[in-house]
Length: 71
Image (cartoon, rainbow, N blue to C red):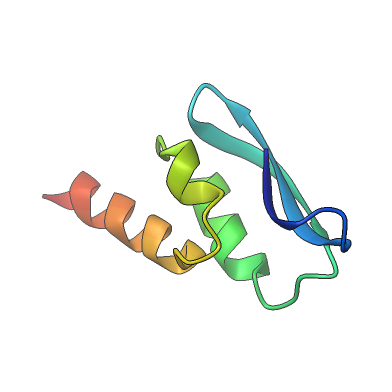
């Protein structure tokens, strides 16, 4: 699963188990390490459509999942 421009070599590749992010690889995308680590560590189910949508900040996926878990 990819987020970004694969042909332009600016993307993040995600590996999922079900809907849970278990690994990633950044290719020329900067300043996403903390957000992706948060996704992986949360072990939360993430909507793949949101994960691949570059208009959705990765941080918001982590924040929304953490908030749901604590409610």
